[in-house]
Length: 370
Image 1 (cartoon, rainbow, N blue to C red):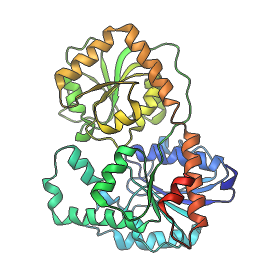
Image 2: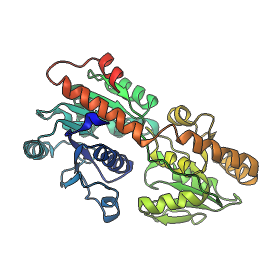
Image 3: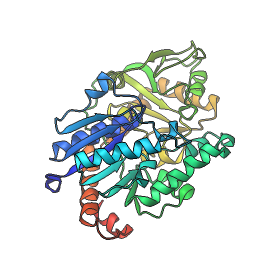
């Protein structure tokens, strides 16, 4: 990765979900290769445990109070954000701007801009079959801002082929795009597993489909533990772990025999990859992203069928041989998605964008370099 020597990157992130896990890991890997990364947060500020995920002094955390684009569909925060980022670019003088968002790509940047598509509200709503509210003026502006950002950036990235197709169909970006799959640091499978099922997700996020999972778990022979905030509607039939730090969740995964994700919508699914690398047998919703990444290494179920999900959970709890095989299969598949490969692909893309900053970059050029 010597091509990253002296490369200075301005990268945005939020701290609400998996984007922080992705951004902190990638920034740390890029810094370890010699790059200097300025990681700029929008939305809530990083917690102490999230700050601890930045493991290299060459990652410089810059926290702002700017609104996340999905928190500001009216786009009222844009003038403030434009001024703030103009000042940041003047101060940092990055070689490349890596946006883990869309709207900011339309700002007047001097450095080449890369936009990474982790999710969007419109694709979320379509997957959850809840789209009527997207016809409101504010959300139409939000959708238009995403389309403009994807076309204004010099390039855009999706973490999976399935989500690449979704974004392409929804927004028809004119900027060239490519797929760079997310990755994590390697982990050795544990020697011993415990008899419980683990899941992770926010109860209020319908895309995670946690409510269906809690209903399906009633009567299953093993206990179900769910990491993530609950609310007054939380089922008493499962054990709610509340918020866990990244290290705490990883420790739970190391012990869990089964990890379940019945998500209706998942552009990639970093928690599934982390569970697989911890040697969990996977029970996943039958959606295109999970099929793309985990076909042959997981049990797939209809995420809308409580009975089907319950049968799958109970059957895997009862079948020691199948569960052990799926644990081995999931761990082996996780080795296809190493963090080093992800970081190398981004470094190649950054280098290409910097080298071609003064002339258009073709899709063919991007595919050759990332």
